[in-house]
Image (cartoon, rainbow, N blue to C red; front, side, top):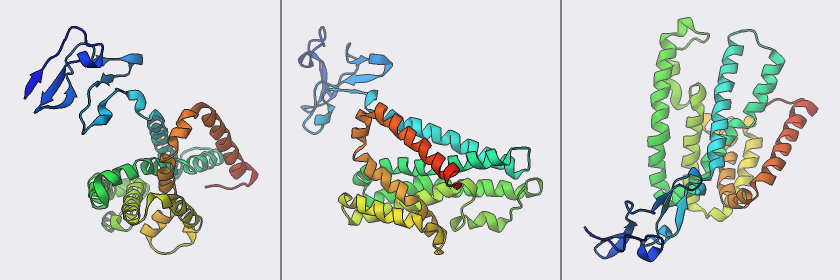
Length: 289
């Protein structure tokens, strides 16, 4: 590799910034040059003034502001609620002192949205991954990142529950441990459902255009409504009950820029709508999730 350095004294303009050249193709900025790295608003950014014909998107300045931080915040909130929900249910199941009405009300509110939230967030990045990897590559990737951890942790937790079943509130047989393929254990149902939803979505979107996402959203919304009436196995039950949120994430990804530009006003409006919906569902209609 031959390195060409040009006018290191004043790198303030693109023409004066030093560059690395490999076989005549300008591929990267010389990161060690003064002025190429800077931290506006404590967020790291990299000035890449020169782009090759193969990578025109390298021009300009990329900052961490380009990341959708609300996605990270939503994940964090969801994780906290998952932990709280499981702990509260464990306390209630163990018969420890807890106000039954408060527990059931808070439990219903949390479970009405926190798991759908995770399916929605997973759907946000699905189509980009499908475009990059293809249906086969995406499924193989999800076997590695979802199915494999699901199997390992199901066996590990199930084995521990079996070994300690005489000292816990639930009795576990080794058949229960090995039945994870058709009866996922406890919290691992999410990984089980998410994997099959990824597989189904990869197959669907390899056959139909993304333009049909709205129709798919409508179809899975109807399937969600009737999901509790279906008696076609665990896989169908989890797909029918959760794919609508995943597809909603796919649809929302195409319009999220509109919402991000108006995030403050929309956040307030959606927050009020969420509280109103919860109040009507739980207190006016007297329903629980």
